[in-house]
Image (cartoon, rainbow, N blue to C red; front, side, top):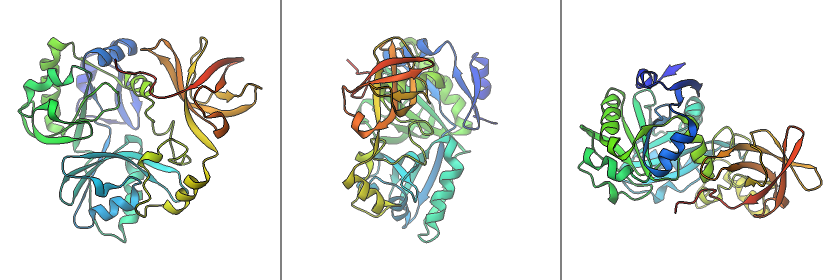
Length: 362
């Protein structure tokens, strides 16, 4: 079990630590509902240093990224980031990721912790015939997510960069918390705004301490992975291993918007056919109409009681105070407002397919 550079700090703060993606990670400090509300209404800081970082460089860097990812990375400019995914030879998703263009011929790929080794092997396989320079920086870098509507105001004193000027999915390499060069990225997994800060492992303790100090008057709290999950689910963001995996196609998962056929990528020919003919199943969002918490693996039924799919993610929404979830159903049952039922033990609990996001900032 790996530790992040901040593991001892989390333990000292009283965090409940759990194994996650091969790492010892804080799942909660005060409780999921308190931490969830902190991010929705104020500002919280997550240690997500378990995420993986690959540096792809050189004249062949873009060619390699275009081959392995579905989005069109040629549209990137220095200082911009792009959400994308990598597909396998059968059309499933190897991983979803964020691609940063750091400078000319230099890109940073940020991948999910559980997929670091698999992703590295997948990209390396296609790089054999392309020849880009690749470096796995995953063990050298830390990542903090500072999330919430007060993030800009709370963190501005820590940097000379005008945080309010960084647009969504843009980033700046600049000073932060006394460190000269960090990546300040206007990205996140919560839907409440904020930043993600990439720095080297020996620097992260200083950054963490100064973030909590600067944010104290704004109500900042450390936030665990349990609240990260409820926050992302209220937005309908996919979690790899639950809502997407090696067997789900981008079109089934609602990720057609990051699948561009202006280029050739792994299995693009078959995915193009799927786009034309339509998918047999689709990932939908649903909310419970009666008491009940949907959990991953629960059957989804139609009005006649026939199984039409399975729940992939579910929780009791802290913001909405009702059960919400994601799951794959047959395409015929995927339209918004379609009534469905979730099998919770012996009960068939009514639910309705809804439009994302569940939570809307007001």
